[in-house]
Image (cartoon, helix red, strand yellow):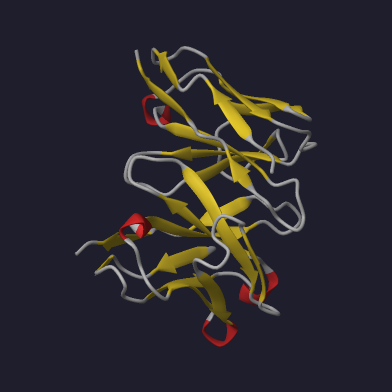
Length: 119
Length: 109
């Protein structure tokens, strides 16, 4: 069974850094793209970027390019989303999701990580 | 960038009735269109990909149709567990520029 297990909720102050994680299991971690999706409170879904853990090829949505960094450690089957300086507007639920093989839809989802940024 | 629109924003339906949700792309996405269901407090779940293929474990009452710019998700007979928000998403571009629609909330009439 494919599973994506995300790290727990975070409460941070503006200006702080943060790295959240997504551990994949039940499939070949290096063979599928993993993406990150943001959902701000009461709002819809926004695609942030994707990474191919096999070679770390990373693609960002123009809306998030330069705002976050996506990475992966294939030795521990874990993808990451990180911020160097959080803003209050980064408050949101963040989901990781694995893409399908031949079809690039988001086939399997993590449970989400709630990030709250408040002074 | 391909812009996705969904209509209606909210659909009020009685249990057992049919629900028809629409999704439109600003330019052709071929059949590279997925539908997701999201219930309150839960992660989204893939329902349909390739515009019309049900994902594993999805009941047959969910069906998708369309290609190009116009797509439809039909729920043939709404069950209580189907009241949720439904999002469409295109994945036609590579390098990727995936975009989601704003969602349709299906609530109880």
